[in-house]
Image (cartoon, rainbow, N blue to C red; front, side, top):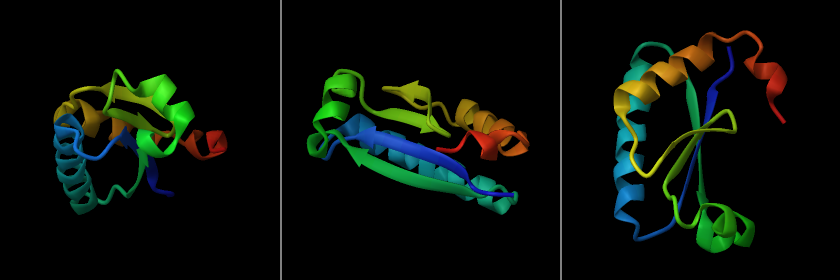
Length: 97
């Protein structure tokens, strides 16, 4: 089974982004202990004008497999459940770009 792709869109110095990163790290660690693999990519809106236009008022943004999961605040229980659901989806790998 391939790793579930997570994306954190934010910027340096954003305290909500730091909070989201901590929640994501904790969830990823717990899921790894349970055998669920994840891969995290972080995108900086200061380095990408298109991302800044789309997300600057609503960071952080957390995506699972390229689909928006959360903005501003990340609930660990909801994130865990969504990642587990994605990991169980046999069609997930077919949707990858």
